[in-house]
Length: 459
Image (cartoon, rainbow, N blue to C red; front, side, top):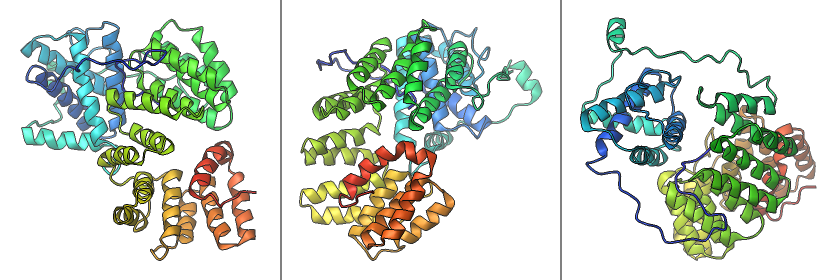
């Protein structure tokens, strides 16, 4: 539930209006600045191989926040000084060089240049390219351009003033902090350390999944009173809105998420969640409008799945198919997307295409990192197209040994129910419900099971 790219906002009443043509930053005027920023990213990833695409995305959002607050991040005085983030340090240092060589550009234009990089990350990251898909693409591109990165000697580092301050997180231990304590630490040190906001956001979602939505709601409301920062307030309203939706208070959820959007321009994460709340209200058309607006402005590829879902319930299979194909362009190995596309094309009587997509799913396993949704769609198609190895029960047995989680037992219960083995069905369902995390996510799991296996009745 981390923030997504942020730029234009959504009006509270959400009345779509004609938009001016966006400024094109992929021009000769701005490419040198984009290149210098990406050289900085490449330098950081070479220095520290553990850096992944998500860390780059987070740093760019952090820099965009600084620019919106009026900071001159490439002024020279700040470059290489005072940043605890390796990526941020190298980007600033390279942009200082770009400003010296090509002249300065406005903060607005610098935000636009970062937006180009963020869209590139969305294009290249994730399956099948992995968590460093963008960085791998960037490395190859830099090699083609003849850009080489090497480790400098201590003497060279001293001559170039390349000393990077060390972050001090001695007082920070999220494992022992309560959710509210973690929130207080984030509010106090948001400008000092990377990842605090993401740690807080991930903890909020974990607490909601554990059934503690009321506690998240109370803590976030208390934290709201302790910060005048609009960006932090927007983040808190986002979690308030998600918690309220989990508690079934949908109208209040809409209001909280609208507050988040109004507080920070282009808060795309809040726009996505607002669409989900309207979807939960049964207003699929309004949810669709919000998701389409968000996807157009942010370029976030995961939103295509939400758009496809809305089109399906609105009875627009052709539009649903287009949305799924857009998603698969970026994630060609997505089991869920391929399975939904097989179903969508079959509903349009495109049997040959449907079989092709289905075969891409059943001819292999979803993969070690696949989630419940992928395995559930895989199982559905395996039942529709028996005969392809491995046997789904064998595959799930192996998965359960590697990743003991309750949803694996739920999928095994689906198989035993179909095969008429009542005792095994009850055993697996009972085992699933003994998993604490499964118990809190059971409603979400069963909603998808009801969609894919309507004959399955947990009891």
